Length: 428
Image (cartoon, rainbow, N blue to C red; front, side):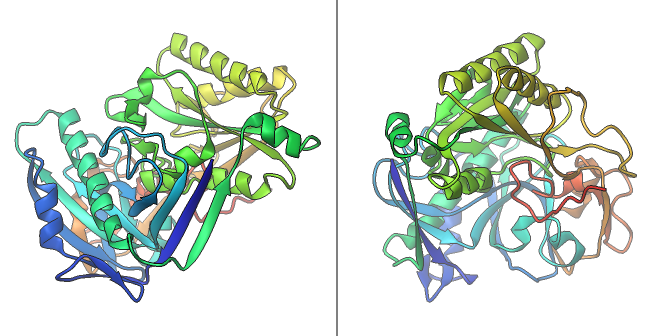
């Protein structure tokens, strides 16, 4: 498969009479976008706003972040099996509005949505303080059950990203990134002496609005699945969950999965990258044994010498992470784990909910319980009072002066377990 991501560098977003890109500026006709989204009869109202890096703007409660793109050559467009017809993706040419993001906001149904601050202390903790954000605030009609409410809001975000992405269809890119990889047999013939490496990406799959989707299939309903890395980069995997904001993998992060990109960078140089295994994180003990055994089996069938395993969320998924590690290490496969820690406000508590002596190579992406104080914003898009019901917030988190005291739990992408964040962890 060969995939070209053709980046059009976006330097600003403005509302205008036409949705287009001109001289690096993305113009969006808000009325047309709102009309397009309200074709869904479940949507009562839509508001559109803009948040730029450095502005004293707070976005809350954030549900998802999506990168606007358009497929100009090859099968599929957008998010196949979800917002567009089913198609096999991973090949062709995609024009990417690089530097822009669609951020969805809406009434909170669960409790694990998040905050993005575009300036100051909060901006240090989220990668989405650096993107030019088109914020889409969606109000569904009354009477929807929680799952229908969430599905409505999340689908609207994907459709908004597709709508905006069309503006880049006929624009020449500023840079072109090419990702190409043949079959396992072809790559092994080219690189016979390089160690074979597999990436196992764990995805929240726990119901109650905690699910990822692959080609539109809820990951609760899949066995561990082997993907060509280009498929994820081309929209096959999306976020559909309300897991804690700090380590949920947003759709934007799936589109730009940093583990995949780093492994691609080393492919043919220091490693032979074999592909991605998507592994559901289930809640039942039987389910955990089934998926962990199956994951290890796939890695062994592929002939992996090494495996990188990234987690999504924390708590009971820690057991899946370590069960996979034990099975791989026992099979003689070198394993590296990527996880965050839930170590308490003082950082002194046990970091994971489970342990295994085989976990000898672990990358920490930070402590979800670390407390930060976010200063008052000049402008809030959404509802600042939502912090009291977000994971990482509490009654009293919102101070009288408009500042917020909360855990990193509440900040989108702050401890991303695919490393898509700004943290450096120091060992003492």
